[in-house]
Image 1 (spheres, one colour):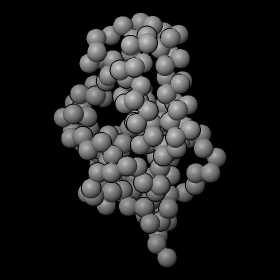
Image 2 (spheres, rainbow, N blue to C red):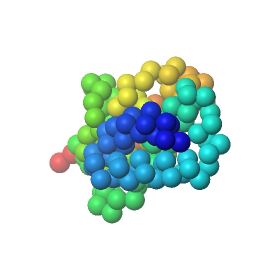
Image 3 (cartoon, rainbow, N blue to C red):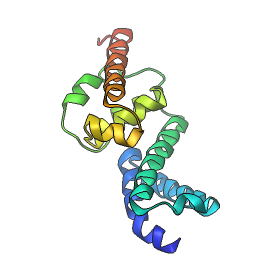
Length: 158
């Protein structure tokens, strides 16, 4: 387990920090994830590439749970948030606007949002990670765009 931690902890921490924007929370996600591996050693027995992909997905979902648990996230999408513009823009660390809206998205859309907007993955790469077809990924991206349009309609800019 020490070798697995040495090899994978830095990337898990970077991923959590990128999504959460908090060093403390990123360290907590890292700790919780590796405690889980200690409790379920069969997960850590996977081949290296499979373990990396598993940790990538588990870290993303753990961070989404933390974002949902934050008490200060807004109940309505900020009027200035335009998911379509974010989808067309450059890939970068999670913005505070996106961090605020992720807890409001269904988990499947939130994961797709992070994979697409932050990681810059294409539809084929997302399909491999999610274990679905490219068509399903395309549908999720369209649902995400629709969520942004619905939010803009519900909260028109003043």
